Length: 119
Image 1 (tube, rainbow, N blue to C red):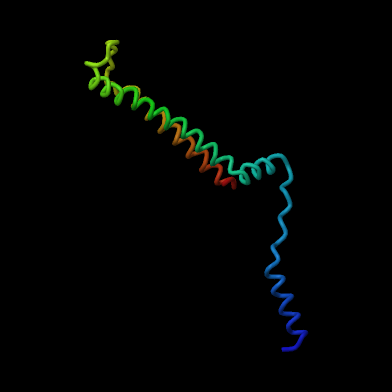
Image 2: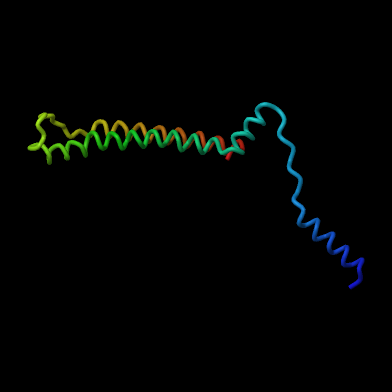
């Protein structure tokens, strides 16, 4: 193999190893906004934050309406205050229905965002 052939092969290897140039930033306010949302994963963070709030409400309703009354029944002879708890499914159902509605709306927003190119 001659020196020229080696040099040519090394040039081809260098071309393959050189990363492509970065694309130009998008022009226009809307395109910059879409780029910002996509680059920094803002949509995923917002979805996690919103659903986390509503899951917290479901857990709080479950503990307040179901678990604490059971604990109170077990420890009723020890409790000097005489507070009573009532088992109720209303707050649990309210928070579950709210969570399902919010999750569906967030799903639709994410689906719409993915159609316009936000990931």
